[in-house]
Length: 207
Image (cartoon, rainbow, N blue to C red; front, side):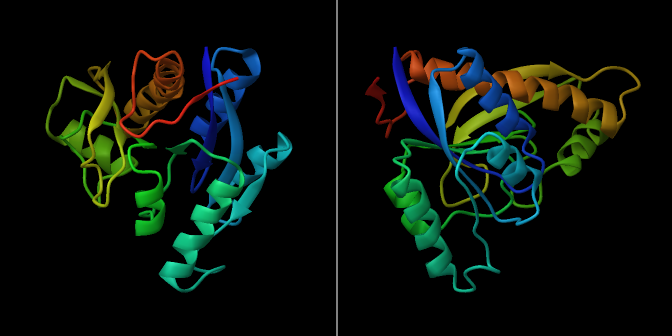
C-alpha cells in the first residue's frame, strides 16, 4: 500500500483537516499529515495541528508582505517537510506561481458544489449554497479538483452528489454538504494512496 506525506493548507476552522487527521490515526487513510499552513494566525486549523504535534505555520501577507516572498516561504515549508501532495482545506487565497509549479498535478482543492457550476473567485462558503438554492437545484455535491492558477478551473479528480431537500436553508444545506466533504476527501485521498486514482504529478512512495 502506497502512502504519502500531506501538506495541508487551511484558512479557518479546519474541519476537513481534522477529518483527515482522524482518518490517518485510525488507519482508514494511509497518509502522513506532515505540515499545516494557514494564512490566518488565529485559525482553528493551526490549533488542531499543534494539538496533534503536527508542524504548523502562519504564513500570510502579514508575515511576508511581498507576494513573491510569501510564495517562497510556503514552498519552503512544504519542501522542508517532504510533502508529496498538497491538500487545500478551506484555503481562501491563491497559491503563488513557484508553489504551483513545484507541485503541479499534486495540489488538491475541495469545492462545495458540482463544478463547473457555482465556481469562481467569489463562490465560496455560504455564497455557493445560496446560489444553489436560488437556482432551484434538486442536487448539489462536492468536487475535488487539481489546483491551477485560476479559481476552480483545474481538472476534476472526483465528484459526489448531495441531495437538496425540500425546505432546505443555506445552513441545513451547508451542514449536509460539509459532512459529505469530510468523508469524501478521505475517500478520495485513500483512492490516490491505493492507486485507484492517479494524479498526473503524483510522487507516492512505498513505506
